[in-house]
Structures are given as C-alpha cells and as structure tokens.
Image (cartoon, rainbow, N blue to C red; front, side):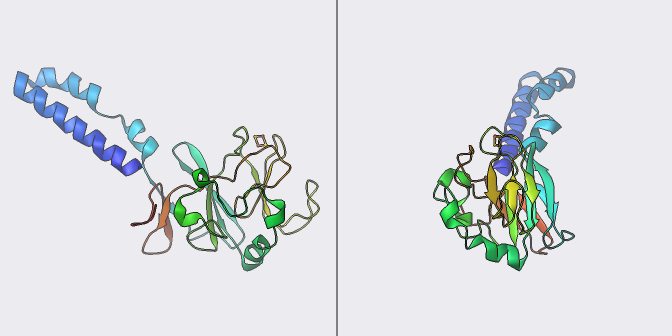
Length: 200
Ligand code: FES
C-alpha cells in the first residue's frame, strides 16, 4: 500500500541518519548523505493516497483524479444507469468480475464498487493503455446501437459498461481496474489508494 511505502521510507531515512551521526558526528558530512537517502518529495507523492473531493460531482457526471500518475475516473451513477447494468451480462467478457487482478475483493459485486452510485476505476484501457472516453447517456451511439452508457476507447474501439466491464468482441482483454479506495467519514471525500479497514 502506498502509505506503507512512505512509512518504510521514513524508517530507512531515520536509520541512516542515526548511523551517520553516531559514526561521524559532523553535521557537514551528514547532510549530503541524508540527501542521498531521503526519498524525494516526488517519489513520496507518486505512491501516496489521494484525497478526492466528490461532493460536487453531479448525478451522471464523471470527474477524473490523478493517482500514481494514473487517471482515476469517478462517476456518480444515476438510478437509470445502475438499472442498465443488470441487462448487459450476455454481452460482457467477465460480467461477474472473476478476474481477481482487476479489482479488490470489496468490488467483486454487480456494481464493482463499495457504494452502488459511485464507480471508481482507473481510466486506462486494458488493451494497450489509452484513456477511454466517457459516454454516460443511455442512447444509441455510432459505435454501438444498443449502448447503455459506459466508456469507449478511441484507439482500437474497446467498450466498457458503466461498471467498467469490458464487452465481448473488442481487443481489450479485461475489465477496467478498480483501485483500492475508501470513503471518508464526511461522505464528501474518497481516499484513493487505501482499502477500507478489514477489506482486501
Ligand atoms: S488501447 Fe484501448 S482499444 Fe486498444
């Protein structure tokens, strides 16, 4: 987990600092050594969890947050969008999220999420890594006359439904990945990069 990585980094940093001060006792000699061992701010933030404010995301809207240099899509799904998920199974490659690499166990369910209305997925196509576009409306689209909302990858035409589940007959092999995340107590923020306590 990202937080553990940061803690370990700090621990290494403290160990290195103690050893050098004890052995040399000269601050001038210590400083360059610390700089070598201290994780850069960039390295720390690269793996750190991200606090996302979801309070202003309208029903049906998608907002993208950055985490580990990846786009993370957060969609506030409406009831019609949620209802549409139920009729898609026969068109999907992995409707039940059986590929355990693609989500934490807490998201192995019909909506692939902790709370039904909130979809949180990494916005990277599982084919060759393009960023899919969000088509949230339940209406025919040029690429699918039976479209019921989801994501369309413009690179090689892979399609995903509103739970990030990949359709059959497209090059992407797997569902969009669900990152670890948890809701904060105020229900207005989500911490991306950390699973809820006790969840895998
Ligand atoms: S990268 Fe998305 S379909 Fe190829």
